Amino acid sequence: EVHSGDGFGAAVSVDGVGAAIGAPGAHQGNGAAFLFDLTTTSIRFRQMEYPVAERDTEVKIFLVRDERYVQGVSTIGYSTSDLTARGVDTAKYQECIRLEHRLRQDCGDYEHTRGTVSFPIGVSELYFTIGIVDDDVREPNLEYAQLLLHVPGGGPLQGEQYR
Image (spheres, one colour):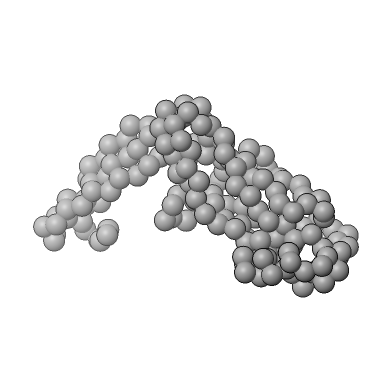
């Protein structure tokens, strides 16, 4: 844990795939070392938008990583959130897909999804799936859900390169 005056950043080492940052703990006498995996910054969505038709039951979301990092394993977290499309949790989604199409009007548009994927050595592209609610509700306007990437245990990665 970083505290005021503990000297966080007194020692820094970066090698392109990782960073080590030291906090000698000048006032408390207890030091700490923090290790960061920088390979996650090489992972992005393959495309900016993933169109889905009303009759689709799922969409594959492809992630790619820079070829310079395929010699190691990289893990990234992902999640969805609502913009104009409405997501439902897994229990509601499972309940809804068992219903007839005409009875799915209160079932939302997609299944909220989150998890992690790990790129094995030599792999530069992976995908995860998002369940789509196929219903008989006519939707005149396009609807959108937001896709997010994050370092496992951290907040979302933001910036143009992660879209």
